[in-house]
Image (spheres, rainbow, N blue to C red):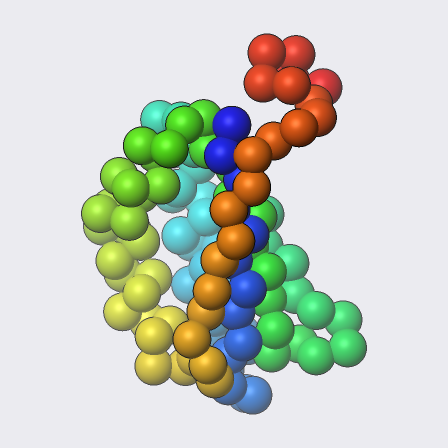
Length: 102
């Protein structure tokens, strides 16, 4: 399992546009083979900051995801409202193990 945490800071006042575009992207992403989870979190004390937790079955899934029409649509909407460049950190799942799913 591959876990990617994406850290995003959008321009103040654009939070709702970002939220709606991201929810649409997440819902469609979860229909992709091997895309296991897509959580969107908004920071309590700074609502212009978001974190995505994306979980993939293997390393090929995020590569294909970035070529999907819904991801490209999301990028076209959100790129202009970023306060700063988003960044991600990749992790390898430790627990639960991939087979048990607990």
